[in-house]
Image (cartoon, rainbow over all chains, first blue to last red; front, side, top):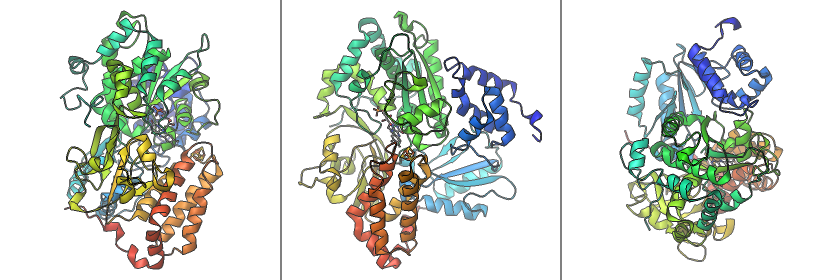
Length: 173
Length: 443
Ligand SMILES: Cc1cc2nc3c(=O)[nH]c(=O)nc-3n(C[C@H](O)[C@H](O)[C@H](O)COP(=O)(O)O)c2cc1C
Ligand code: SF4
């Protein structure tokens, strides 16, 4: 993925995108932008580079700026590279009340990185995020598309071990 | 007061599947309505039911539907708000995950009443796996002729789609949601025009919460008058409550409106009391935006009446001594909780989620986060507490959307009811030292 020529959706993704555009009234296919950005992020390395966003603009026949302004608004779109395994720990009220800070400290120590950083081997990125709607099963973290709930420190240890041998990067496809 | 309408079948294995849902009476209301009723009657029943929007504001649903403009030849839309990002709220997720067809049946019935040929379920991006569950359920419904052309031979056509967001609390605000659904940044629109006149793609649109739309099914099953007998006064029907924090049994509970708060917290049927037998300190009763109340005011009103889970009783006393039912996000805090630190997590949240269009909200949320952080860092002064009060009071009523107020109210309530805690952190920073680890994870 070094030059923009190489940025092309797989045949399957392109079919999904074409079908998706039919969900909206004629001329309103820009509505597909957010779902399509999810597909692009999953397919092109877990983040949205400028050439990837330009490609999405060309697929949806809209201006690149229309893609940039949206991609930069939503917290799930990564505008910088992230590790293969993106760990997002919820830190808002209920999760905090039930020990989210202990979970974050523990992962920081285990992986030897701070919140916002990626491990040197490019394997893990750790983020602290706002309420993920899992307050009744706090503390929790999301890894890729999966929710991991009612966390304890030993549960986190077991999960980190497991992730080492998995590619958790694709989120939405 | 246990009455289940939405979650009466949530324990049945595989109720997410169409066949099982139908075995337990699913889509019978739809069939009966399409065969024997008409859109006007459905609207009439919803009006009679007294149903109020379950997304937070509690606006009467029938009234909202009756505002929908109906110009000739212009499409109308129903949009389901499944953005569910208000901290403390996770009921919509539970409902969609367990009983997706209840929402879909409600979507078809509501669309029939509104004359909407297309509907969208806008779901927060993080709920990706729930979106998948909905998509599978929708595909089942199409295959069974419950969606698409000429549904059940009635001549009514309807298409329903799932749309995922990408992480933005503000997209729960209905006009920001519509912007997002149009493929744009989630910036709330200036109102008027209201969505009922110019909503999605400039067309008349109704936006309703997941639980509101699902409630249309039992309303039509029972009839609006019967539904209105459930609950208390103008708080009719049942409500899903997301219970979290320091309780023995966190989870989603369906309650009949009017249940005493004390019973909800301490009864084995619901929250099962405070963890570890500790004492109750405070409750945020309706999601992060509503005022926090200390024990004495959440269990009883200022007049000494038992506080009930209803729009009116929780609101009793206004903001001086009351709160709001809001989204039903019920966050419970035990005696060891730092109210200031909990408030900090809210302030950080609102600062992160402000869309940035209005200065009072964009700047105010940032300042409030910073000042609370300063106090928690042990560098606060008494003037900082007053400054915090001053900032929050200058946001309300001065912004495009209610997020500004939602950010200000929790700050105001924390100072109003727990000022001594702020003061103790300022006067004696030693008191702050241990709050981070006051609740240790077992193991
Ligand atoms: C900042 C903000 C966030 C909101 N988030 C949600 C939400 O996640 N879900 C929801 O149903 N309503 C939310 N609302 C309320 C909606 O704007 C709207 O009132 C609601 O979807 C109407 O549906 P109802 O009448 O069925 O409650 C939010 C409002 C604001 C101001
Ligand atoms: S109040 Fe805040 S979130 Fe709402 S429009 Fe203004 S800046 Fe955006």
